[in-house]
Length: 155
Image (cartoon, rainbow, N blue to C red; front, side, top):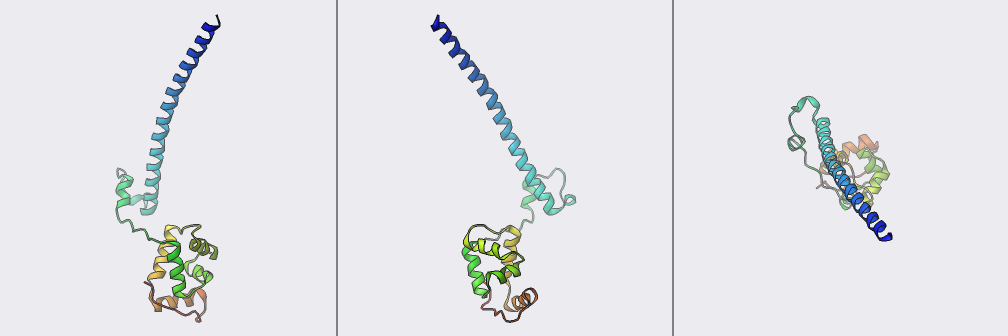
């Protein structure tokens, strides 16, 4: 009698596991589909925010919108930030004031703890590409001093 009870319990467990697995697989597929649609919607929202809702046709996909007039990403590393700042002869505080960020942000960027956001990367690139005269003028405006020397032209 114990043998029949054991066989029935094992069969019930097997069937329950099978039913649970099929339900779980269906939910997993639905979850993957939902995540894909959320990612697509997020890309579309970013594109709409970037270009304005009126500039994008309703039937355009996010990939189409992103490929149009997308500015190239600026490659900025911790070593490059440190190199550019020291080449300009600035302290972290002065460099942060020129960029409009806190000195802790510059410190974290240079140590590699964090990376600058895209807008900040563009500001870093603008500062890097400035000539001596433009940089001197910007320093006078933002730092309020004329005593900060311009060491060299940016790359």
